[in-house]
Image 1 (tube, rainbow, N blue to C red):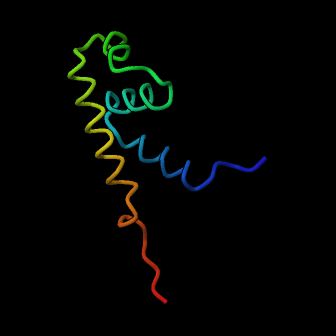
Image 2: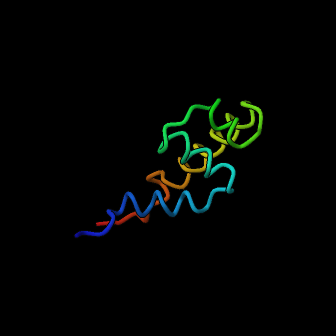
Image 3: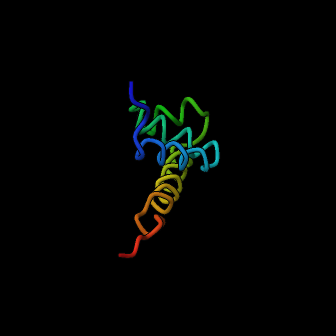
Length: 75
């Protein structure tokens, strides 16, 4: 059985760098398919807090996973 692909490895590493609250919000929303309302109830925080965590988590992931962060190869 093959191991995880490079995209999966990069995503896992990027998620690991997020603060715990942002990581939980991103995983619960995008992988567990929970709504902002459900996450807020589970984490016992206002919905606005969850939205902030998601916004910050997405921004951090985008920055970490952007092609400009990859090592460029010159021919």
